[in-house]
Image (cartoon, rainbow, N blue to C red; front, side, top):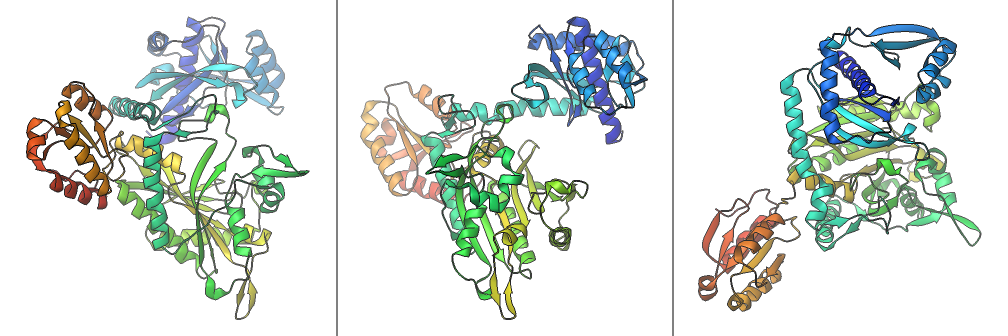
Length: 583
């Protein structure tokens, strides 16, 4: 079955679900019900609050409708006839959608007593639908507007065959166990609360340590690649973002300006205008280029509350941002180096597969982009040339470019086969023009090219991704607590403190558990907290100055000397090994 046929099947399945809901819950009004990746959903205005048990009832009713092999019948109406038709049915949301359609022929699909405003196409009859499952219930504002009614959204899955469906269901069950919104609080890494505000993250001590390790590592990696570290403030005059174009093209994602001394100031949504001003602080020679500025810069962007998602979609986040100012002749090599940097990161963190997307300008909507057409074509060709000459497979997405230039997005596949957007490399010829950037060349003054790039994407998002990728079991070099030292009785406390002190002196991150609790409880809690190693100290270990090393799989390695344990853990952490080195 072709993908378009599968999408048709999924959309038809959405109609059957809606028909079942209206039969089971009379008075339900219809929102919209599109096919989406892996399935479909439908939004309902229903006086009954759906429950997980209702999903089973709805599925049963759907199977009855499927067994009846009811045709999908397309009716053509004028706009006036369609208004009258849906008015009689009390479908107020469909009437609102109708108002936005131009005069002319309207198509309505009938499935028995069920009717929907729809362009189609659909399968021939309900009997063509199979391999589906209803999975979740969520709230969704009508038209995504927080000021409009909250509807109930039911999500469903639909696949070509039963094996695909079962495999995806199994993956989703595993994903639920790995969900960073669940594991983050359980592992005491971060929290989000209403006093601080939605989309704003509080990193707890363990999350703070994880973040520090990531930030220290990425800073060193940048410095080794010739980047200079810079820092910029969290606010600036709105005028800066008017020059850059963000105030015009990006205003929907910016918080409202504040007034300071009669002037408007903007909390920053981007770091790039600040880096431009650093470049402009001195006259640059072609001999100075490329200049590479790197900053872990915190930015703030307005996201609708319904779009917020743990660490993955937030309102305040820190980008591992960098901007490269180079000559036109240098740009392809800089883009290539950025791509190689991304590959190094993926390998370090154990991401073995990835997908590359080239996002370009949409010629049909020039109002969404700034700059000359010829500049866009040159930039897109430069990125395409880098990918093709390095034999990197990619797909092209027209209209997905940033307003100031095309970009390469890299998505990584995690341990259970899901793709995550991480690294991005963006070509920018507009900001150098808008800010009148120059460098001195032998033949006179010229305009530099600017490359934006973020390797992690953002620190918060990257942490969310790796929590799920590792299921909370971080490799030793990343683990906030690398070893839990547990004692059997109070008699072992002095030795336990000595062990902890020597480990800290070696640069490791141990944590003591000397509570008067049963040893089994302490070991179990260490495991639940995903601590890589539990170091058990009983009477024998304290007397012999040894340790019993307990691995995450429950295996115990007895009689290990303290110096040997420290040396082995240091070797594992320093090499950033993804597997434990104790045998």
